[in-house]
Image (cartoon, rainbow, N blue to C red; front, side, top):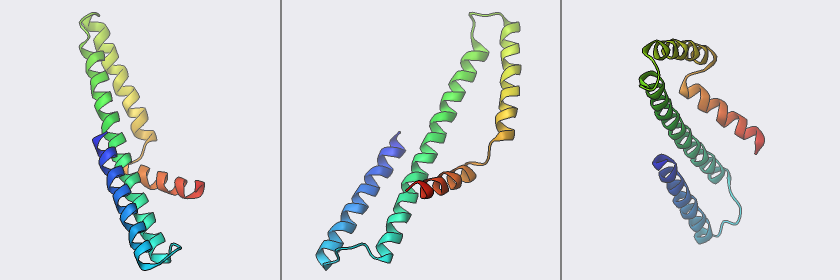
Length: 115
């Protein structure tokens, strides 16, 4: 979450400074360089949000796996079966997933088509 806030603040400040600079120089429209800078800034914000999301999901998965495999309210045999099921589920997700960098590239590409 802190990564989201930090990235959003940086993007906001950069955008604000860029608008102020355009106003000072009398540029009313966004030029090619400004448009490219804005796209870079958007990509940076998306990347920060992506990585923050990955960290949050990993943290939640750790908590869930620990709870499911160390729950003393159930017998040891049940915890063992839960652990085995987690391995199977993890294998399925691993085979279906992609590297974090691949995921962010896919997200950025999809967002370009939306906007």
